[in-house]
Length: 113
Image 1: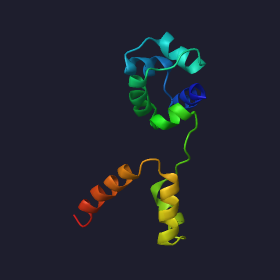
Image 2 (image 1 turned 120 degrees about the horizontal axis):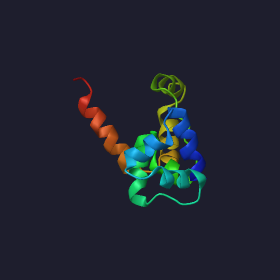
Image 3 (image 1 turned 90 degrees about the horizontal axis):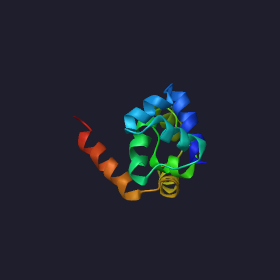
Image 4 (image 1 turned 30 degrees about the vertical axis):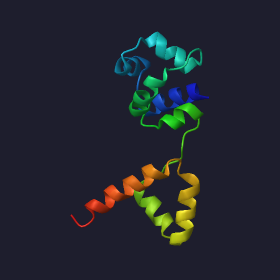
């Protein structure tokens, strides 16, 4: 459920309900209703809420937090697999292939700078 994600992530970041509400320019009562599952944020508020809580919009909507690790650990684990295995896994796991390749192209522009 999306509301449990909001509360757990907010608490993990050490934010108060009042702080999150103020960042969104809403009342504490409105935010409290979201965390309680009484009401839901408008679609237009989900993006900003995701930014404040350092999660994705997809995580809010699905009610499931993604497991992420530090980049160094990710690279070490990735080195255990072949290129083709990693590409197949990326294809299956990435929700937006265009966004992935756009991000890669931006990275390759900065390599060697």
